[in-house]
Amino acid sequence: MPAVNGHFDATSLAKLYAALAGDGSIDGARLVSRATIDEARRDQTPYFALDRVIAFPLRMKLGYHRAISLGLRVPVLGRGFDLGVPSPQSFGHFGFGGSGAWADPERQLSVGLVTNTFFGRLPLDLRPVAVATAAAWAADRR
Image (cartoon, rainbow, N blue to C red; front, side, top):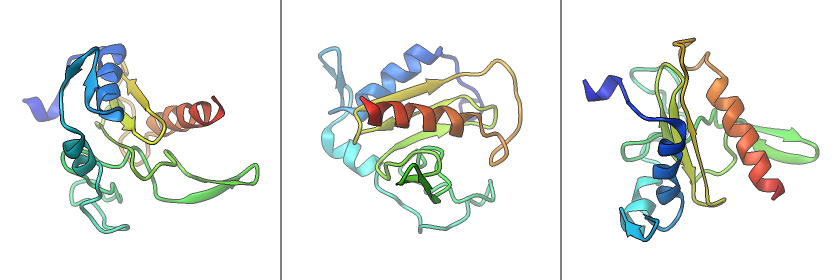
């Protein structure tokens, strides 16, 4: 069942999303057009619409959701951050087991995360939020 499993390592997953975070190509091979990337990262649902499967505002996009974002702005060290991923253009997909990936075109950043345990469920599994937040903050510092 393709909708409930994936077979990849974190490096491969992040590399695929690196093409989505960039111009649609990687290692000289174009995977998708820039227009397709722009459309894929556009919100398709209202700001606070709850997902019908997971009672959580996932901010759905075309085949993706906004990367691990709760949509809450919080002040940190005098700057406002969205809890999760600050860029509203970011997109990806995480499963119930915590594995997944996201692309942030604004930062030219991609992250892949795989787990070896099935711990928690959205919105209670905060591992993807913690990894996404750390990666976004590190990218902002570079």
